[in-house]
Length: 236
Image (cartoon, rainbow, N blue to C red):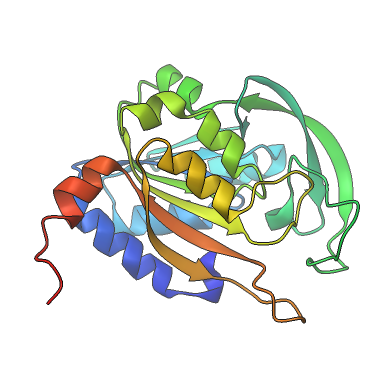
């Protein structure tokens, strides 16, 4: 995610320190090789992480990497519904997606990033996963899901209605990188419908034409806004 702006980690830790949830539960959506999970466990050794990744080979890798740690690996694609989806496996595993690349318009992704295979994968909602795992509260939901962010938010409506997710750290797109993927304003609107608010933005790379391509955003629940942020003195 925000390797292009490394300040993101400090901002996330600063925010989670204010929330101060004992024995936090984190969900790493689009876990890939598990690097974000590793960083969470290093910073929060008493945490439990649910790493969700649709790629079977990567799930096996994550399972071995964290065999002795409190990490639950789920081989699935988070989405708005239960069922089966096609996963387009890219040469760069970090850009694999359940959505194809755009069929028209200017190309904003690297020409070498090609699809090497398409495989069916199980899809599940975050609400269903939370119910199955008896997760009552999520301190941090990370979404690096290559265009599936909006369907995942739609599949977490129950958790969001209860403000049961404190912090959401999600990739966003400003211009199309995947066919049918929501852009930033659509993701923001879907979260705002549940009274979640934007806390910070981290800009990613720019196109040759100067256009910002994508980045990452932090959203916080209404409970965090009221109890952790609005308690600070007003600006001078």
